[in-house]
Figure 1: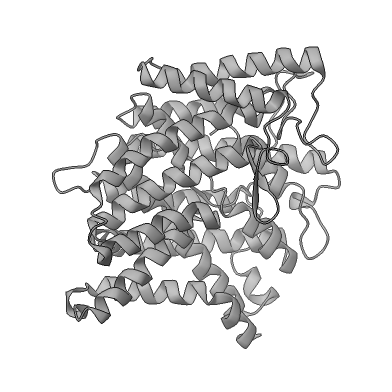
Figure 2: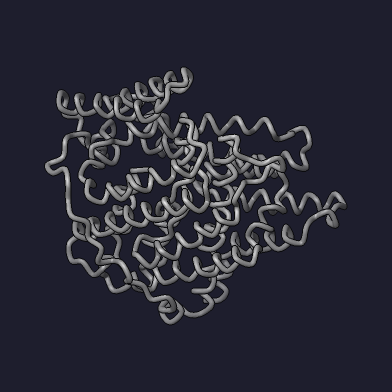
Length: 444
């Protein structure tokens, strides 16, 4: 999960709002990136510890990568940064209310079990694709995607990824404790040596075989002082004035749906992979898990770190034997330490970290055995749930497609009365979610 301390600030710290200002009003991009990195590490640390202590599950929390581009490129350009963070705080509050009245868990309980397992499988494919794209193994191309550079793997960066993938696969198959971490560290060391010897450089149009995100070389500094000036920089109702009540309301609704279902899907997927489900195939302490996750959205928005949520990368810990909240608490402590050691994060290139995501994705694919694809009434919704997560780069899109298709199929099977009321409501909400763009056009 450490990559979020680098990638997140590059998204939030480089964008501008409707006034042309960087987040926090900084005049230098380097300063805004540093400030975002500090609060992201702080919030991830505090809320991961809270999840471990209260939720009692190996589920760590950090800034939601799926919402960061929404905040930076969709919301902030239409309002101020404080207004955009205010929307995050507001949606977190609303979700917390739904948790406290028990509605969020009732929604999850109403989901058919095969769809729950499909969510876990879809998340596995999703994080696999993230790893392949970040490492440059999968790239945009003609007509759609390419394998490596122009259909071939070339350069040291690709070789390092392959070495890392094979090393981590072997370590995991041999059940070596800490295999993924050992693999990341070993691959990073090899990458540093390769960069020093051959000067591979960063990935660019002129150097497509270069390193992704970070060039693996020892940093000039090891420690740095955290900057917490973004804490408290939010305006909870400012967006309603900036873009209007209806547009702001739709924005909150979209944010809520993403946070609402991402955590439930992630928690179930992680619990299933770790064999932590109870006798009814439910996630233990789900109410506490959802409450902490909702609070993480509030704290994240109020701190300028965007919405924080449960991370699918927690599966890496489960894959190495994590079964209790202690794993999340240790992760939280390490995030707090990372506030002072953020220069070290710049050492690890995508090519050294991405193989871990691919291996974890393979582990999560095993849940597909619980889905009966011979029954197409559940097989098709499950299939849509699984494939749309990676193909649209969105967990919520996959869940929404599964919900809507499941309800439509039941209606035409003459089994509409079998559907719980919650399923009708959620499916309708997803229809609105998918149609939010034309609705905004009609309103505007």
